[in-house]
Length: 274
Image 1: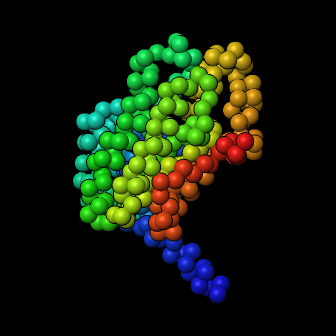
Image 2: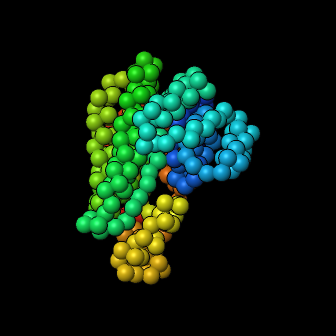
Image 3: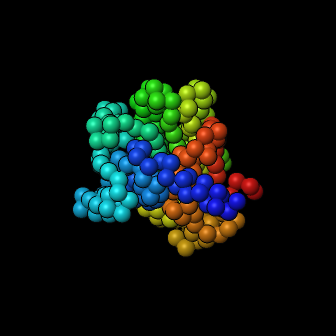
């Protein structure tokens, strides 16, 4: 009995080997955590994002050596439909096909709605929501032909609940969850799942940038923002880790999750249970 269980668990770890994924916004933070988790299971990774070329090369070299996978990199601007299309084609050229799509790229701005800059609104909606539409639209036909595909959209607890001073981000993430559900229903009979992960606060560069912005918007110190705003929302009083999000993503891509689709999976320390 124990041998069979262990054999099953071992095979689960290898079922994704040889598949290929695009992970947007994967040069740091949550996206990098997801890329690492998938790479550990033998998935080829198309990285996307910003950062120093040498730093990105170092990560790619490490994963190629340790996990024995292939990697590629696209610096595509996720606000550009043309750049997104080129990234998709580059991934096909590098790997032959795209099996897994993880929409993680996102930006944030914290400000009261009456002074919220219009260009910031447009940028956030474009990168946090519209980019996912463009990537999904591009990869669905080939996934349908193979009757297998996994789409994971990194939404946020803010796809489920709102917070003040984040009108564009909350709107985009609510929209991303709606897009996820619609894709799941359209693709349910084609062997393709679409799910949204809804993290709470993870201490990523995006969140670190929010701390001084939130302090200014609310008239607080940065220490008060961390204690009384960010971690106040999470009953565990701890930040979610990028490794946790990576493991949830890897599970959603596994055969064990083939009947999980159209869901919003909170990973937020109990935030939305309140």
